[in-house]
Length: 169
Image 1 (tube, rainbow, N blue to C red):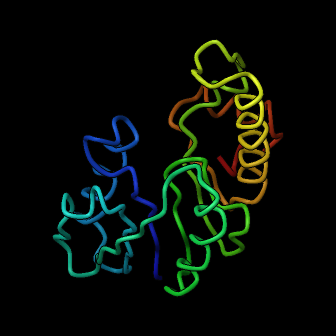
Image 2 (cartoon, rainbow, N blue to C red):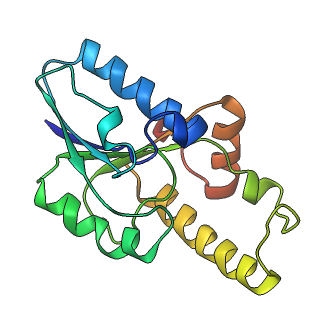
Protein backbone atom coordinates (compact mmCIF):
# COMPACT_ATOMS: atom_id res chain seq x y z
CA UNK A 1 0.00 0.00 0.00
CA UNK A 2 1.22 3.49 -0.85
CA UNK A 3 0.41 5.97 1.93
CA UNK A 4 0.83 9.73 1.88
CA UNK A 5 1.26 11.85 4.99
CA UNK A 6 0.66 15.60 5.05
CA UNK A 7 3.59 16.64 7.22
CA UNK A 8 3.69 20.33 6.35
CA UNK A 9 3.60 21.09 10.11
CA UNK A 10 6.59 18.74 10.76
CA UNK A 11 9.13 19.77 13.39
CA UNK A 12 9.50 22.20 16.27
CA UNK A 13 8.33 25.24 14.30
CA UNK A 14 4.94 23.54 13.84
CA UNK A 15 4.50 23.45 17.64
CA UNK A 16 2.10 20.69 18.85
CA UNK A 17 1.06 19.66 15.35
CA UNK A 18 4.70 19.67 14.31
CA UNK A 19 5.71 17.43 17.18
CA UNK A 20 2.81 15.07 16.48
CA UNK A 21 3.81 14.88 12.80
CA UNK A 22 7.46 14.28 13.60
CA UNK A 23 6.92 11.58 16.21
CA UNK A 24 4.27 9.75 14.17
CA UNK A 25 6.57 9.54 11.14
CA UNK A 26 9.61 8.55 13.23
CA UNK A 27 7.67 5.76 14.92
CA UNK A 28 6.16 4.51 11.64
CA UNK A 29 9.67 4.30 10.20
CA UNK A 30 10.63 1.99 13.07
CA UNK A 31 7.75 -0.45 12.68
CA UNK A 32 6.51 -0.48 9.07
CA UNK A 33 8.72 -2.05 6.41
CA UNK A 34 5.79 -3.35 4.35
CA UNK A 35 4.13 -0.19 3.02
CA UNK A 36 5.63 2.73 1.14
CA UNK A 37 5.19 6.28 2.38
CA UNK A 38 5.31 9.67 0.69
CA UNK A 39 5.90 12.43 3.23
CA UNK A 40 4.75 15.85 2.03
CA UNK A 41 6.77 18.66 3.63
CA UNK A 42 6.88 22.45 3.35
CA UNK A 43 9.96 24.29 2.08
CA UNK A 44 10.58 25.57 5.64
CA UNK A 45 10.78 22.06 7.18
CA UNK A 46 11.95 19.96 4.22
CA UNK A 47 15.55 19.77 5.47
CA UNK A 48 14.48 18.84 9.02
CA UNK A 49 13.43 15.36 7.92
CA UNK A 50 15.73 12.69 6.54
CA UNK A 51 14.05 9.33 5.97
CA UNK A 52 15.66 6.48 7.90
CA UNK A 53 13.54 3.74 6.34
CA UNK A 54 14.01 2.99 2.60
CA UNK A 55 10.21 2.79 2.18
CA UNK A 56 9.86 6.47 3.07
CA UNK A 57 10.48 9.34 0.68
CA UNK A 58 9.97 13.03 1.13
CA UNK A 59 8.42 15.51 -1.26
CA UNK A 60 8.59 19.30 -1.01
CA UNK A 61 5.26 21.07 -1.56
CA UNK A 62 5.02 24.84 -1.44
CA UNK A 63 1.39 24.90 -0.34
CA UNK A 64 0.56 27.22 2.59
CA UNK A 65 -1.85 26.01 5.26
CA UNK A 66 -5.42 27.29 5.20
CA UNK A 67 -5.02 28.74 1.70
CA UNK A 68 -6.87 28.59 -1.60
CA UNK A 69 -3.77 26.94 -3.02
CA UNK A 70 -4.20 24.17 -0.44
CA UNK A 71 -7.75 23.63 -1.66
CA UNK A 72 -7.06 23.77 -5.42
CA UNK A 73 -3.42 22.76 -6.01
CA UNK A 74 -2.67 20.25 -3.26
CA UNK A 75 -5.21 17.65 -4.53
CA UNK A 76 -3.58 17.81 -7.97
CA UNK A 77 -0.15 17.19 -6.46
CA UNK A 78 -1.44 14.29 -4.35
CA UNK A 79 -3.09 12.71 -7.39
CA UNK A 80 0.30 12.50 -9.16
CA UNK A 81 1.61 10.10 -6.52
CA UNK A 82 -1.19 7.53 -7.00
CA UNK A 83 -1.70 7.05 -3.26
CA UNK A 84 -3.85 4.26 -1.87
CA UNK A 85 -4.44 6.21 1.34
CA UNK A 86 -3.68 9.74 2.50
CA UNK A 87 -3.30 10.74 6.15
CA UNK A 88 -3.99 14.38 6.87
CA UNK A 89 -2.57 15.21 10.30
CA UNK A 90 -4.88 18.19 10.77
CA UNK A 91 -8.50 18.95 9.80
CA UNK A 92 -7.53 21.20 6.88
CA UNK A 93 -8.17 18.57 4.22
CA UNK A 94 -8.64 19.88 0.67
CA UNK A 95 -12.39 19.60 0.15
CA UNK A 96 -11.83 18.55 -3.48
CA UNK A 97 -9.70 15.54 -2.51
CA UNK A 98 -11.69 12.44 -3.51
CA UNK A 99 -9.36 9.55 -2.73
CA UNK A 100 -9.48 7.50 0.52
CA UNK A 101 -8.05 9.33 3.51
CA UNK A 102 -7.94 9.41 7.25
CA UNK A 103 -7.64 12.53 9.32
CA UNK A 104 -6.42 13.36 12.80
CA UNK A 105 -8.66 15.81 14.60
CA UNK A 106 -6.95 17.25 17.64
CA UNK A 107 -9.85 19.29 18.98
CA UNK A 108 -13.03 21.10 18.04
CA UNK A 109 -12.51 24.16 20.23
CA UNK A 110 -13.87 26.52 17.59
CA UNK A 111 -17.11 24.52 17.53
CA UNK A 112 -17.33 23.96 21.26
CA UNK A 113 -16.38 27.51 22.26
CA UNK A 114 -16.80 29.88 19.30
CA UNK A 115 -15.50 33.38 19.96
CA UNK A 116 -13.89 36.11 17.91
CA UNK A 117 -12.12 37.52 20.98
CA UNK A 118 -8.99 35.43 20.45
CA UNK A 119 -8.55 36.67 16.88
CA UNK A 120 -6.75 39.76 15.64
CA UNK A 121 -8.85 39.79 12.48
CA UNK A 122 -11.52 42.40 11.92
CA UNK A 123 -14.95 40.95 12.65
CA UNK A 124 -16.07 40.47 9.00
CA UNK A 125 -12.83 38.63 8.16
CA UNK A 126 -13.09 36.55 11.30
CA UNK A 127 -16.59 35.39 10.34
CA UNK A 128 -15.52 34.58 6.77
CA UNK A 129 -12.66 32.51 8.13
CA UNK A 130 -14.97 30.85 10.64
CA UNK A 131 -17.47 29.92 7.90
CA UNK A 132 -14.61 28.44 5.83
CA UNK A 133 -13.57 26.44 8.92
CA UNK A 134 -17.13 25.15 9.41
CA UNK A 135 -17.41 24.04 5.80
CA UNK A 136 -13.99 22.36 5.80
CA UNK A 137 -14.37 20.54 9.14
CA UNK A 138 -17.87 19.28 8.26
CA UNK A 139 -16.80 17.95 4.85
CA UNK A 140 -13.64 16.46 6.35
CA UNK A 141 -15.48 14.63 9.14
CA UNK A 142 -18.15 13.32 6.77
CA UNK A 143 -15.85 12.10 3.97
CA UNK A 144 -12.91 10.64 5.94
CA UNK A 145 -12.72 6.84 5.99
CA UNK A 146 -11.55 7.08 9.59
CA UNK A 147 -10.89 9.83 12.09
CA UNK A 148 -8.14 9.70 14.69
CA UNK A 149 -9.18 11.64 17.79
CA UNK A 150 -6.39 12.47 20.22
CA UNK A 151 -8.60 12.17 23.30
CA UNK A 152 -11.89 10.73 24.45
CA UNK A 153 -13.21 14.28 24.84
CA UNK A 154 -12.42 15.01 21.18
CA UNK A 155 -14.03 11.72 20.12
CA UNK A 156 -17.23 12.60 21.99
CA UNK A 157 -17.19 16.10 20.52
CA UNK A 158 -16.84 14.66 16.99
CA UNK A 159 -19.74 12.32 17.65
CA UNK A 160 -21.86 15.17 19.02
CA UNK A 161 -21.20 17.64 16.20
CA UNK A 162 -21.07 15.27 13.20
CA UNK A 163 -22.95 12.15 14.29
CA UNK A 164 -20.06 9.91 13.24
CA UNK A 165 -20.23 6.28 14.38
CA UNK A 166 -17.87 5.37 17.20
CA UNK A 167 -16.18 2.61 15.18
CA UNK A 168 -15.08 5.19 12.57
CA UNK A 169 -13.25 7.26 15.20
